[in-house]
Structure formats: C-alpha cells, structure tokens
Length: 485
Image 1 (spheres, rainbow, N blue to C red):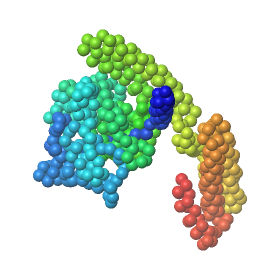
Image 2 (cartoon, rainbow, N blue to C red):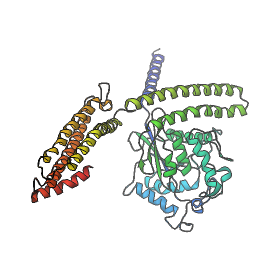
Image 3 (tube, rainbow, N blue to C red):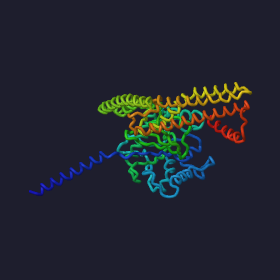
C-alpha cells in the first residue's frame, strides 16, 4: 500500500520541479540580439554591370574572372575575414548565416573557416510550412532583370519602389517582382529564425549573428524597420562590397541602427521620431490587408474571420501607439528631456547655454565696439586726456558679465530641476561650471580688446611711447585677439 503512495509523491515532486523550472525559464529575460549584416564580395554580376537577382546567381570574381582590375571577390572575402580575425580565432559572432545565393555563401566561407562555425542558409524550403515566406536574398528586380544597373531605366526603375517602401508605402510592387510587404515579411521571418536558432556561444550574454546578404536587401530592410532611420545614407553612403550594417533588437521587438559601413549612428532626433511614428501607422493597415490574401484565396471562412479580426486589432493598436509615441516625443522635444536617462542631457544643456550666452552677449559686444571706435575717431593729438576714454569699455565688460549672469539664471534650458532623475544637482553644477568658464572667456576677450584700444590711443596721441617690452606684449596680444574672434 505504500508503493502507490510513494509513486504519487514522486510524481507530484517531479511535476512541481518541472513547473518551477518552466516558470523560471519563462521569467528570465531573453538575451539581446545584435545582427551584423555583411554585403557579399564582388560577384561576377557586379563586374558585368548588369542587374542580376536570380537564384542561385553568379559566383564571386576570381583570378580568371576579374573585369575591374582591383581585388577580386574571392580576395575581398579573404581580406574581410582576416580583418575580423587578424591574429587568433575570433569569437565575436555566435552563428553565421547566408542567403540562398552563391555569392553570399562564398563570401562567408573564409570567415567560417577561421571562426570554426558552419554557415546556415536562410530561406530554404520548409516542408512543414510551405507557405512561410523567409529569406535574405536580393530584392527581385522583376522586369528590370538584366538591365544596366548604373544607367538607363534599370537604375531608376529597380530602386524606385524600394525607396517608397522605406517611407511606409510598402504596397507598391516592383513590376514583375515583389512588393514591400512581401520583402519585409521574408527578411523579418528570416531574422526570427536567426534568433530562435542561435545560442550564446561566446558567453557575453547576447546573441551576435553575422548575416551575409545583399546591398539592396540590407539597406532597404534596415531603413524600413529601425527606429532611427536616415534615408540619406542610402544615397550618400550606399554599401560597397563587404561593407557592414549593425542593428540591435530592442525588448519591445523594434530595431535600432547602430553602425552603417563602419560609422556609428546616433539616436533619432524629433523629426525622425515623428517620421517613424507616421511610417508605422500607415504600414499597419497595409499589412492587415496583405495578411488576408491567403485565407481569401483559399476560401477559408474561419481563416478570413480570424485574420480579419487580428488585422482590425493591429490597426487599432497602431493608432493608439501613434498617439502615445507622438505625444511622448513631442513633450520630450519641448522640455529637452532625453528619451532615455543619460543620453543627450549634457549635450542639450550645453547647446542651450551657449546659445543663451551668445544672444545675451551680442548687444554688449556691439556696444563695446562702438565705444572703442568713437574713442579712436575722436582722438586729440595734443590731449592726453583721451587715454582715459578707452577705460570706458572696461565698464561695459562688467555689464556683459552681469548680463551673462542674468542669462544663466533665466535660461530655462540650463536648469535641471528635482524632477530630473539622472542625479539631480550634478548635471546642474556641471552646466554652471561651463557657463562660468564661458563668461570668463568672454570677459577676458573684452578686457583684452579694451587694453589694445588704450594702447592704440596712447600711440596715436603720443601720450606714451611704448617700450620694446610693450611692443613685445602688444604683438603677443594681437594673435590672441584674432583667435578669439
């Protein structure tokens, strides 16, 4: 009679332990994910100068196929791998991924050999989910396939629709190719696969994945999804072969651009924040309609109802998010409060302080210039009393100091109240120190100018003949005044 009781007790203990383990795993925060996109090395398609987005596509250029005269594609891939691991085996990335196109896999091969990791191909057919759209291959060129990529209608036609996608108009298709909704879906799904299939192998607490992809795919998806896009980067700094883009996934599922072709990218300013808010708002209904295509074409009544209800919910949530984010961003912009603690507070206060000092100081400096000019023009060659006239600007300098002091106390942008949770008092003290230094610099510059004015008047009146030491001091002071100006 005791054995069943023991079995039940053991079963209950095992169940309790399993439940506790699952609960603990569920409550642990997910590891942050950083994705480094690498554009493939020079392909034979690049060297030919024609648009080629076919799969599997051409190989990298080599010693036998190298039309540009510079390092061929295979050498570029080796050079990139050596740059990442110059001396020893590198551990920066936890996993390596590539598109279904040969050129990305060949670009990843030298680095994979150094890192000792396999290259996983994203976008392969999934028999368990044949309708799933996934992959990081190049954007399909449609009717522009095979046209010159640097001139003519191919250059404009191929890139026009993707540029519209970055502004939220994802429903626009490339003629004969995919639209922005299809493109965004497949790349986003591929990155979800990266996140689920990658583990933290280097022990840094983060998922770091290298994804070898294509120029247009990397640039367009990044600008379509990050919360700090800069569309000018696409035009002014397009990605060259083996250039990289680093994006980081946030806790709320959004993405932030960290690095573009080796250059650090900062947080979004207010206009960019509002652009992102509008972009996300107008994408939501487009995505809701796009998701209806499968149940409608399949005549799945239940799927139509479920997908339609989800679409309505997503659009409503997007509207609420738009209002919330727009109000928050606007309030932060007006009050000067940064979006996150520790970011931009000092910079905003410093810029505001410098502006206030400049604006309040301008009238006094102008007054000083007029006084000095009048003193020089009214010099009496026989009178030594004119020397005293040049002393008046010094009094003006004192008034400048008073005005600057007033600007420090009245300029709201430099005051950090107790509501600032980023260590109240310390930022304020730092701002006051910067203001005091600025005030001292202005006062020193004005006093130096006044001293030069007195010396000039003395020289013109003959009231005092300068000695060699005076000449040396005067010649030394002039470059300083020039630097201050």
